Figure: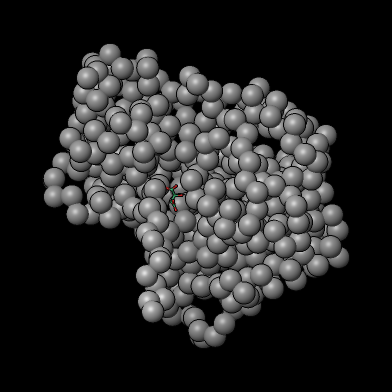
Length: 399
Ligand code: LMR
């Protein structure tokens, strides 16, 4: 008898799968706009200088490789909370918020899903349509019922009214996943006024928000991007936030993130954290240390923190200029108005509006890799390749 004979194949990952296809493409003109990683003008994903300096210090000072606890390194958690909520926030002094270190933002999402499945049975989770495709599979794997609220309209533009209308009909108690900034995949963010309206519905419907905060610093700035998270934490007694250090610290492969919980009182926070430690123990035991140690070094040192903040700012500004650069490059092809939204969106991604068929042609005819939903990683572009990209987009749009 074969134990494995009946096991079939699942499709490759819709995002990471592109990395493999890109790697084996021998066309020297190839362009990787698939997975969300920042690339500099030479096409490299750099290690920020602040990270290198912190690593040098760790090399000299790290004295042990013994386990860190189930919640990770306390100094990482404290400093990440201060970055998320602002150091002076009363929530921190009153011990109403805690961070559990996780393997990346993906680990934080999985832990949040397991927490809801185990402790809040029967609650569905509502995701924006569209959302990061892995949101769908993570929460389904946790056994949660996954539902959707609209986010963009047929015209490929943000439709806040449709979103609010749908949220108003979500059953009380359900979980609603919101993107703090740099919405993945669309790049369309809510305005402060939109967030206020969402908050009113969340309060009225008694929903539990889970805010995915994977791109702090890539939208409008480190503090600006935390605006909605801080608003919700101030106005609501209970909240979940998943934070990632992959992009803003350039620590992608070090798997560094956290699940942050804001609870009604300090006692309840301890209860919840005991549940998270239990779940984490059964998922990955204790989290990997290196990336979090780097983040803790940087955030705990004024000089390194300033250097890092400047580096995040530089990445953000470069991506913003690539956005307007692409629209300018599309002008000679008569496509600048049709794709004007690319310059208005925020963060690493643009929902271009290209169809799956057009995306396939970009890949087959020009070795340009996008996610089949039409999502392009603007952070993977470079100034000198914009004309090639614009000409290719023009070809697949006009034929
Ligand atoms: C992306 O959406 O490309 C990034 O969040 C990376 C990932 O893990 O998918």
